[in-house]
Length: 347
Image (cartoon, rainbow, N blue to C red; front, side, top):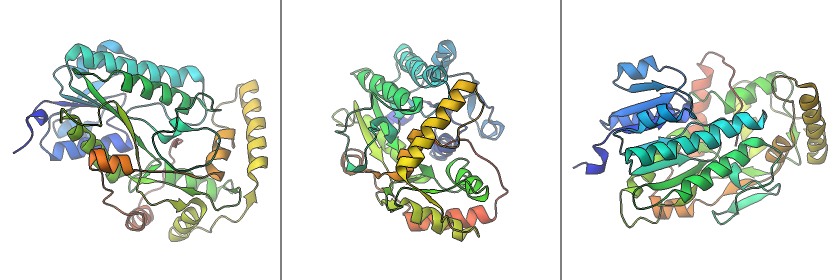
């Protein structure tokens, strides 16, 4: 018998994105009634019965209307990227999240599952096996982690008896259909703009998109329990299998028929080049993204993998699709897929 908390409709912000769409599809497969709030109209999802509201996150009236009648809100939408005006990130990630919290409160929504990011704990140092006790960042050369940290802080502060909240931090979401991470790697590799930064031995975590969806559904189930320790907490979500980043990238490139990356640049030189590029792009008001930034240099050269012990314990999260299986699926899907260029995928 299905939990009575699942009888109410569900809202997914950003339900047309990579993670959001997979989440919507899984909710529909459960027989749930789903509303999607996004800028892009999902005609295929509407054909499956999804209710769509086209609006920006910071449109408080539209967000409130979308929340009406819902039992759970999955707040997946965000402005992602490593470069861009602070105001754009603040408007989407902070003001948008405030609108979602306000909409939940006004509509009497019981549960809010917020998609955060491990980059909220960026500190410029290697992060090897750290847990959720690491403090949120207050100093980062990228607006994305700073605004996501502020949004997460406000979501968790909103937790209470009427609205139970949880924040999930999925790291580098990937899998078949990924429009971000792998297309970006391929574009850079084919253009000769992908270099090994640092000594090439840094380990990172990734998370398969289906595992990330599992975590979101597990978080909702956890919030249905009145005694759940998940309420008001944040959790790292990964595959639980840290990989040597550059080995994984090169293995994937070879599987896709591309030559492996051989050229190297020191972390110090890459970070210096990133600082110069940022200054040029900012000073000349250039469009697009600099070829290197300080944040990207740090992410490509340093360890960033995380303990998921808390998610296993409190949410019952257990990664179903292992790295080897998921990488083989991805390579097979990419070999048969048309080429398309993706946007920046922020860690």
